[in-house]
Image (tube, rainbow, N blue to C red; front, side, top):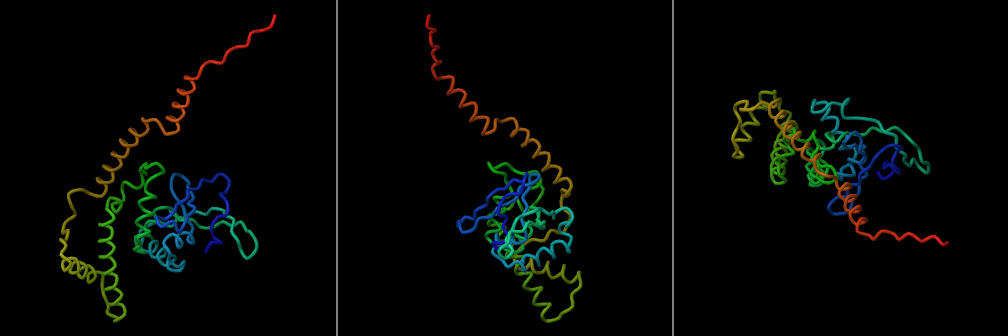
Length: 245
């Protein structure tokens, strides 16, 4: 798998280094258009899963319409080892939304860690595309509960498939409602008081206010420059040498 890791950044590219909390894995993440891109091989290494497993999740994500292939896949040229040769090839990279979607599906603790890291820029600046993703507002404990519910329901679905029991979409909806009731959770039997469009618009308005406040504050590099200028002003002025007559 290591032979698929870019040996050096492509011209004009920018990279961030992500290190897992156990310090056992480092992933070189491509940063382009203010978002992160990873190859399928790097996603597999990140979540410690086989490439075939990652590919299966990717196929399901796109086939189910959760995300669009056209908007979330982009080719970047990387240099990789093929045997003993270094070969430059255009390789598919997957946008951050896809990486996070895979992370939710593999139900990995690493997925939670990476989501927390990737949904902020260096320095803790929130990204606009993340404010409208509902799952990003869940705590780690809430995510674990969600993952367990999904896992149990998927196990039930696999059991139905193994026993070759035909199920219509209405059957699945009914079974899901029964499953949630059995686990002691209330069902949402109405559309809610706020539409998804209104919630997204509200989140984006709040983001614009946050961004304006952030932009009004001096950046770290600006503050460091101003501090350096102040220190220079404290230095005594150099004495001019008198000209000999």
